[in-house]
Picture (cartoon, rainbow, N blue to C red):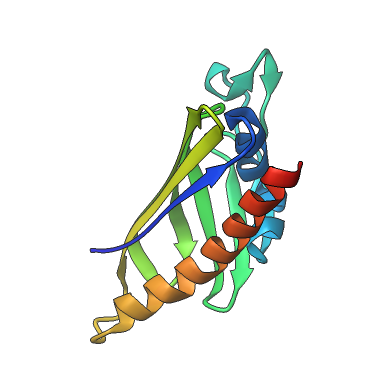
Length: 153
């Protein structure tokens, strides 16, 4: 099993960071990827925040267009201000994928612990490590830039 793990501190509250990461299009802008929501979350109590329906919540599907091709991810768990879990549901050069974003409040803002676990579809030596680099680079760059901006906001 291959893994990407990023831990980044932000100088904004957890609800601010969650709003940045939960919105599919905004998340795409942060990491420099073209991401579009292709299916809204169903209107259930588990996707409501303060009585408002969140179209990016559990059950929503986003399509990502990047160097590894086009693929889709489905949001499987969505807990406002603290947790987003998703899986690749269509396409992609990986299998057995699980992405998790955990946001924890701190005295100076919040911390993001972002883990992605997967296996490469192709049994080529070194392919999994290369995919780790390809996946981690835009996430690290975009989220680090966002953390720097959070200091000035």
